[in-house]
Image (cartoon, rainbow, N blue to C red):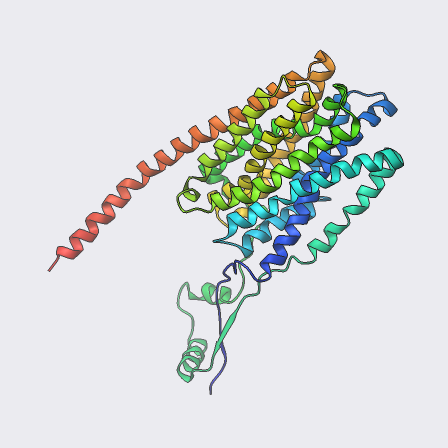
Length: 411
């Protein structure tokens, strides 16, 4: 008379195990996704000569690639966005560290692809260089193969009492409202591909607005830096090495920032920590606008790599903290879709300023001003949102305390 009764346990992030393989795959995917559109700026000078175009025209190349990555769901986006979601599924307590390590793929690959791109340009021209670097992107297919979904654990029992109770439930007619519950029992709930319900979270709206402003200026210095250095008379190989400096500093900045973000007293205040990173990055752009010699550009790259690494390590951790793991996939899709518009506008606008006014200082002031604006807005808006939420929750907490006291004093 006994029967098997299956009880599905909720899947908990293992914070390790196969998650380390997923983290390695995310490291490589993030590296190619972010570094490749910046590294191809090595070829911009040659493209301008061959096609007789300006800075604004060549900046469209990186902007379109990043916009496709963020908003199209095609190409690298098929690897990049799922890798972030899988990383959030495999890590919980160690999630800030995991995000920081995965984000470190961007500077590692940037520091390698930049000098490699210059070598390929000198030996094979920009067409051959594009072909070889495009072939390297096929490694993302291997990384995508390690992204396995978490397996649900099933607990089986053969207790006769439980089996008899289950059979009795099947023999008796269902009560009102019970039929729908039984029909859904054991079946996974259908999840929407893109749930716009996450937009009800006020914190997410603030984050989206801030990130739109951020992306307008965040990638501008790295995309136009090599051309700027070459115009100042810096040799081609040394100009390409500037991106490697940014990448090298960024390699250490992202994991370190991930460790700091995981501290108990920092994690609840993640939006403010992210605001500091944005202000740091913006001030670096503004204060370095007048640097023209190679030594000054190296100093700029060092501080930019540090601040840029902080922004890269924190951006998705802040988003996960706002919406949680369950709503992260939908929130990420919406955020990247809106950022695609910003990244499509930012670098070409900066290139237009250079073409129109022949002044590189303007792009640093523009990019820095946008980052500073985003940092101030995020900090103030987060403070007001949290303060209002506390006021809204305080009457309910006060009522709950009164109810508990009343129950304790009842005879």
